[in-house]
Structure formats: structure tokens, C-alpha cells
Length: 404
Figure (cartoon, rainbow, N blue to C red):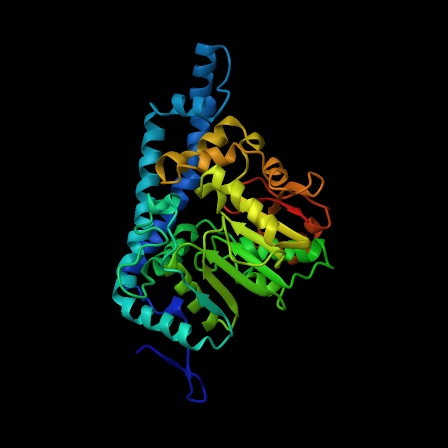
């Protein structure tokens, strides 16, 4: 049984994140994959844009009398290009390599990972809870494809009380973004930390009692809200049991009481008006638009009067030029995220009003990543004294939402 010892000799919960240990070669491979992704997503992406601007777009314009009007037209023009085809192949393979680079260490550590999750579920020293529903139907949006090309997606269980896909997600996402993050504010940043501190600075009187994260997976964008609002109760829902088990163990080992439950966000068992803040991160583009509309109506139901709902998502198509829309929508065609492009074509404010929120309280904004700015500069942004950088590789986030 894997345990750590407190200074007093008393048994303590292990940090589930620290249990898998990469070998020398695995660690080297992970660094290689991280920098390969950076090379593809930043360096080669700039070269590809230059090829489009200097060759592809002028040729298209000369032939058709106008520039490509949307992402589909750009894609049709780009697909025969050798540079684009090579870039696309490299990006796809780097995505697969992200997950495979951590699978070995997770598989070796799986018995200890399951043991750590069992300990957390049995003891819950921080006071959090874990509610699972083995009879919950897994939505087709999750079960039909391995989203992000991650083997097993968020829900697959290979053993009893399994946490494998939670561990692969936790360690794979570190590889995924590792070389892209250039933090000027160490220990800070990321979606939840940025949103939480933006709300705290922008609305100093807003003090939520309960916060709900939709599609929470392992809680990466739930737990950081504890820093901004330490007195708030944290709740997370997801349809995948393995990621919830992993997330619960993670929270308990960090001493944070978080309440995880296996639910479909289209129909949750929470009381009306239970939450003061409802959030999500990179969630809605992975489900069909009709499901998005159902969930936002459910958000309206569980949100308390005076509460706020805010969702970090990809920028809508109308906010971007045709080429960048083409670049973003690559995931819809090649990364097992078929609803990606359709969601981006929606009007976020329109989605909120259709869900019952007023147009006056609904908005779409862009905020900087807190890790990319000093505390002083981030506070200046919250005061409206500066603008967020353009959307690119975690430098800023698009948020849509509403007040009630």
C-alpha cells in the first residue's frame, strides 16, 4: 500500500499526482514531445501563415476575384499545399505522442494510483465528497470518440475503481502545454486562477458561497478557485468516473474540500439556485450545440439570484479572420472534436439569452492569462486600463456568460 508519513509519523494521503515516476528515457521523450508541439504550434504555424499570406491567398484572389470568405474556403485552398500537409501530420502525431509519452509510467503505477484514490474516498480528511453513478448513460459525444485523441477518453474503466485515464490526462496535459507557457508570474495563471482573480478584482463585493464547475475532469480548473475564494464550497460534475476519482484524491491530498459527482450537466440533481458561480473551461466545444443549449438552461436553474455564470471557451468565428478560424478549426477535423467548429459559429450572447438570461447581463470578453502578467499589470487590466493580448497559445482567454 502506497502511503506517505507526516512528520509525526501519522499516515497521510499521498499526492496522487506524484505517484507515477517517469524513467530517464520517458522524461526525455516527454520534453521532446512538449517542444515538438511548441515547434509545430508556434514556430511552424507562423511560417504557415506567411505561406498563406504570400502565396495561397494571392493565388486564390487572382483566380476567384476575392479572398477566401470563411474557414472552409481557406481549408480548401490550403489542403493541397505540401507545407500544410506536413504541418498537419506533425501536429496529429505530436498529439498522439503526448498521451503515449506518459502511458508507461501510469500503467506501472496503476495499483498505487487506485490505492491512493481508494484511501481518499474512504477517508476524505479535507471534507470533500465523491458521488458516482454507475448507471449514468455516457453521452455519445464522449463515448463515440477519444476526444483529443486521448486513449479511453474521460470515461473508460479498465479495472475496478480505475483512475488510469485520469492519470493520463493529468500528466499528458503537462506535456501538452509544457513548452508553450512562458510565465512571468510563477505559480500563477491558468484558466481558473485567471478567472477567479479577475472576478475578485473587478467585483470586490462578489463573494460566492458555492462554485460549480461543469465537465470538471480532474479538477484542474476547479481547485484554483479556492485561492481566489477560500470560503466558497467547490463542486464539480463530469460523466467520467475515473477522472472524478482521480480529481477527488487530488483535492483531498491538497487539503481542499471539493464535492465531485458523476452527472450529465444537461440534468443535474442540485437544488434550484444552489450556486453563486457556475463555470466551465474548454467544455462546450466538445458537445453538440443542442446539448449546450440544454446545459445553459440548467445553469440558469441552479444559479442563485445575484449569481454569475462564466465559461472559458474558444473565440467565436465572428471575432476572428478566416485564416485563424481555419487554424482553430483543425481540431474539428483531426483531433476528434467534431462539434468544435459548430460551437464556434454560435453567438455566445445569443446562447445566454436563449437560456433565459437577459441580454443586458450577458457578455463576451477576453482576459489575459494571469501567469503572463505581473500582479500590478493584471490588476490594471481588471480596472480597464489595458487590453488583453490577442488569443494565442494560452496568452488570453475568451469568456462568455451572464449575471442573474
